[in-house]
Length: 433
Image 1 (cartoon, one colour):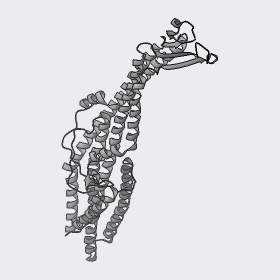
Image 2 (spheres, one colour):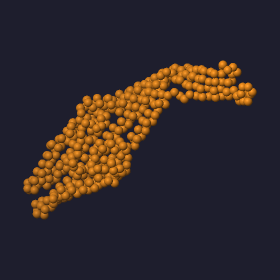
Image 3 (cartoon, one colour):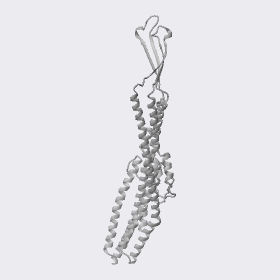
Image 4 (cartoon, helix red, strand yellow):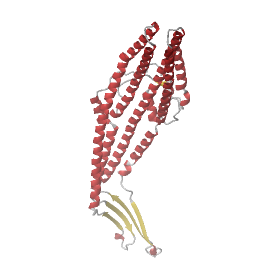
């Protein structure tokens, strides 16, 4: 068995023992306790555990509970009065006055109040949807980095094994007088550089692990399982289809639509303030000596004589509508721009992966094999082998970075299109990072 194969087996065992440790999970049904997990599973867990969604859900619930009170009449009033000096008077007894009254706003006022509350609740619900999209994008981006760092570690160990084999060959040839001392020193230098590279990868791994666990609202050092590989089976939808979907259903736009509708209702409410409110009453007063005068009914109105104050409130409500309409137009333009940019980046990443798989990686492997073969046959230099090995390492890492970019950039496209997930399927490659 070669050194490379032995190294691979060691890496697989160590990675499986560390990354799939069950100590990170508290609930057995958690899909992230398995040996591997998908970006969709991570997103689902983030949505379940992130406190931001819990907070906005409570905000939306508060807004919903405000709808009925907003459209309801004020409670009626009951008043009672009596003449204390009539207490114990012969023949008449204590003189009292009892009155029940109810305020009635101008017709349409209650409906406008209810509409304001309903649209506030609708906007709060859209806030949840917008946060879910942002969290999904962050979770999938973190997943992409976790995938890349796992693959980069595997590539690192494979490259280290190759250099160990090369060092054995060079030392043997040097002992026989067929190689230069600088070749021995060069391979030692490259191994030291790989040690430095490993330290960088471990630092990045710890950072990404903390990022994922922060999204899951748990200890940053909690171990994570292995992510699955990536394979794009179908191209992304056309940008025009995504734009149409985004304009129809994106939470950021629907939230602003709800706010505009709510402020329109506030304009109606401000217009109703120019008209009087009513108060109807019915009562009984024994203060009157004549029995026919004791039952009373009546109505009263307020006098909206300060029209300047009401006009200011109305103009403020109309200005607020224009303000939010401008925000919606700006949000629409930003959304379409970001969507077009994200779509172009996804298309580029998919094409880059195909280029690496079909051309760049095979050429890098062939280049390394040729350089190594020439060196062993005595017709090539060792520096050419090192150069080819570096190119092979960079190409392999470039392929995995491009695969991770597919996930990350698609997550951004999902955020701006409002479609999560996009109809682009990803499958595991069956390889452990």
